[in-house]
Length: 375
Image 1: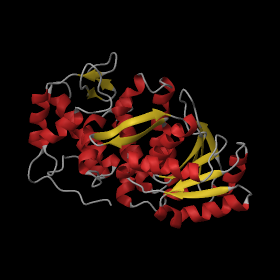
Image 2: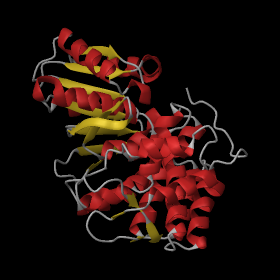
Image 3: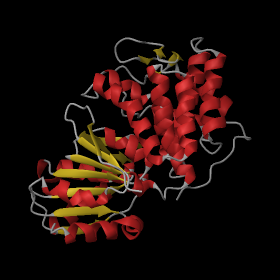
Image 4: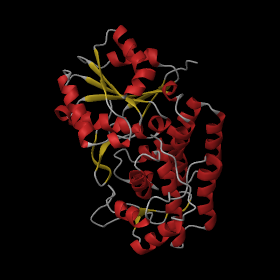
């Protein structure tokens, strides 16, 4: 069913217009023609091209838009220097100029790769985000951060580069597997935790997920993040709170090597952060239990460290976290809903490695369920 087109802003320092709706693809050519360009490049993966990209390409060409298709791999392992170089060279070989538009049709990983390629090509060309997953619709596209991974960790090389627009047609995400969609809800739970909006609102969010109204759920998830970006449009100040659970989560995602979705790794990371706060005498047992209840019992995302990830290996990977500064590794920790352990400055708390390692060792029990590959 076609819905009306709802435009709003990402609220960032360099804001991008976001067009949200269901079955709104027919309106995209008109929106794109408002941006003067010589040609468009549709960058997507082969599976996505076969499912939805071919029809989109046909529609754009029928509207008189000069279009070339570039196929790339998808997933975290494709966020590499090799993939970045290949994409950049393919765009140049295809005749890209400073006046071209690059369209990223895919999830968060593909959007990151295309966004960074657009930032680097000719010192910056325009690109459009066309997200195809719930996570990309509601989280990764609401940031101007573009990045690829290095050999030793996630998102180690990147830049800030804003899309000229985000085209949020939830129809593209309807075929998303249930497990992946569950993972897409995790960041919304996190946003409610860090802003103190309470357990009742988190339950409402989970009820919206169960109801199956993808458009309504998408808007609810977006609305959980926009106030944070509005308070810090640069993403370099108070918006650091969006990284709650990510110090653990990014390292877990990296070491899982494709066996966990981003949201699943962050789910585990938030539960570990709550347990670490509890171990420091800050968070209550009840607050830790609320993490387990909302994420594990109600949403069904993993909350324990997979047995195949060694605690010391995880700690070493965390020490290469992209938020690490000259002060060393810090943790974003909550006492309760919306109340950080260190509410001033960068809100990060220093914790001795020995305590973190002890916590991780307690988690790494042989009975911890293993997660099947998502590849």
